Image 1 (spheres, rainbow, N blue to C red):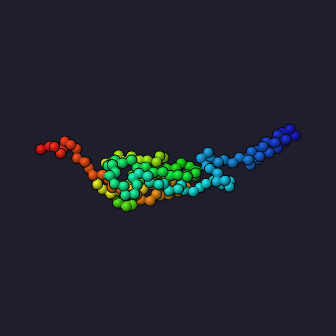
Image 2 (image 1 turned 30 degrees about the vertical axis):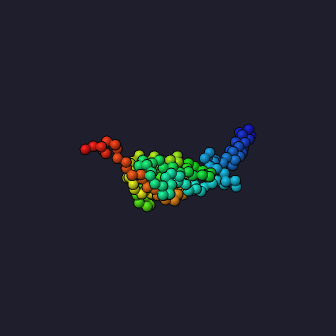
Length: 146
């Protein structure tokens, strides 16, 4: 009889504990209605260079912002840059809001750039921004050589 009562007590505890356990990861956010937010992030806004900027350095630091993100998961960015529209992917899965272009861009040339924000539920794109680089300034030594 003692074993039977222990067995019933054990089964009851297992039933109660399994019915009450709900696992939600720390990165998930509640939408206020008891559900989890599962939507793509908002589109980022390109800050620098901005539309039709001129005189942009040949190795610019591209910067953007992505406000009001309250979704779950890690917010990441893909950066696109090229002399043609649509631009080509140059960096992906960035977790910060700027990117330094290490490759020397062509002088006095129009470029297009774009940023896409993404999480595990999708992505959103900024508009394509165009800018013109500065003209290459010759170094003083080459001007005075004969």
